Image 1: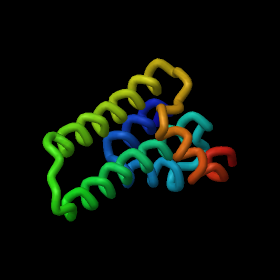
Image 2: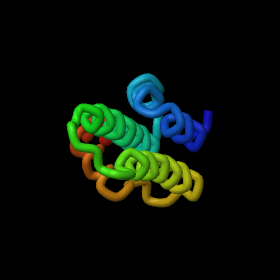
Image 3: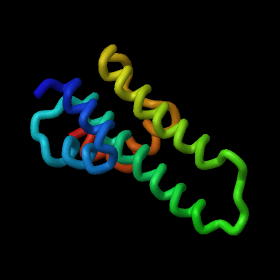
Length: 107
């Protein structure tokens, strides 16, 4: 499978796809590992924020919709960056992913 294919699968299947690409597939390029780590952080962050928001007693109008749009936008940006072979780091998410998965990305 090509590196672009691995990245697309990581983003489409969220944190599960990211974990499989990052830890289950050998001989990935550094950019592929960065994209996989970003996929994990992006989807896990969306999931955690959605769960926490559901327990709040106050509802903010359109918060869930805005969160979903940001999540889908991040997926689309990641896939586009992979297809254009640009710098793989997404704003905010890239820094968080690098700090969490630094050893796996570099190694």
